[in-house]
Amino acid sequence: SVLLYGNRFTGALPSTIGGWTNVATVDMSKNSFSADSGLPTEIGLWTNCEVLAFHEAGIGSSIPSEIGGISALKVLDLSLNQLTGEMPVE
Image 1 (tube, rainbow, N blue to C red):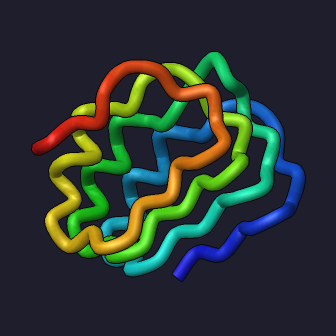
Image 2 (cartoon, rainbow, N blue to C red; image 1 turned 90 degrees about the vertical axis):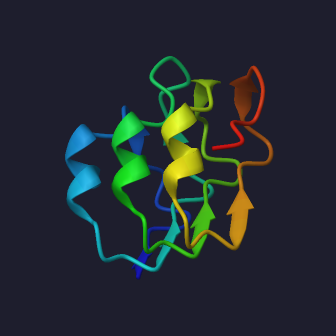
């Protein structure tokens, strides 16, 4: 698990987080990431992730289609951000 809730992190999420391929839970809620950068497409590599929470994390842009590749995903919380577009189905 990666639990980085409420740390006031700023800036863009690095693409290197794609290397967390065996993570089951990621919670980066209540941070201040860059609204311009959004979620990196590399999160699609987290195929074993069951819980993905970026609640009120300051992220923007569109939801990457790669998020649909997280086959184990059971809980997705992207609430209270500045995301645009539609939720990918696959």
